[in-house]
Image 1 (cartoon, helix red, strand yellow):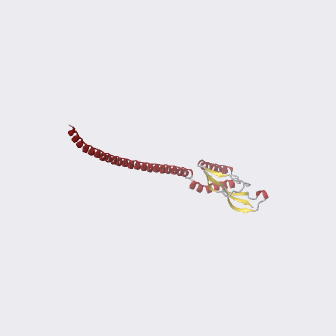
Image 2 (image 1 turned 120 degrees about the vertical axis):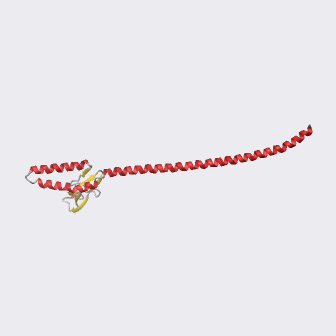
Image 3 (image 1 turned 90 degrees about the horizontal axis):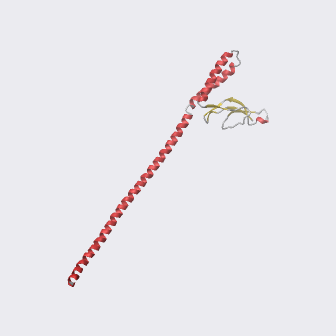
Length: 187
């Protein structure tokens, strides 16, 4: 029995060696497969992260585009009638000159009729956002707001650098001046 045991032991030893060797190879193979799976999984995670970043950038660009176009549209609506308003301003000036001359006439009914039309016209433009830029003689000249057409010697020292006369009224549409008031400045 002892002989058999030694033989069996000898036969078993190579089997153990083979088993250990194959186990090590299997472990290496499994590790290699795990690494491949991990690297493949890592690649997929990286790809997903890149796609998420692209999506977020695209979404941010789209939000900026919406905000910008919305602002441009609001600005356009505010000043949509600017060209029409600028074209109508000389007509308003003509009404003012006509009223000035009709006030000198004796036909008060005609004056009242033209004044009524003029007020209705001005009110319609005011409802569309047109406002007169208030300028009075004696106000300080501001190159940002006023358009100086000429300078004359000031009647007194207090009027130096001030507005002497308003030749043409100025108007603004919303916050934008569409016609600067034309003024005479004292020097």
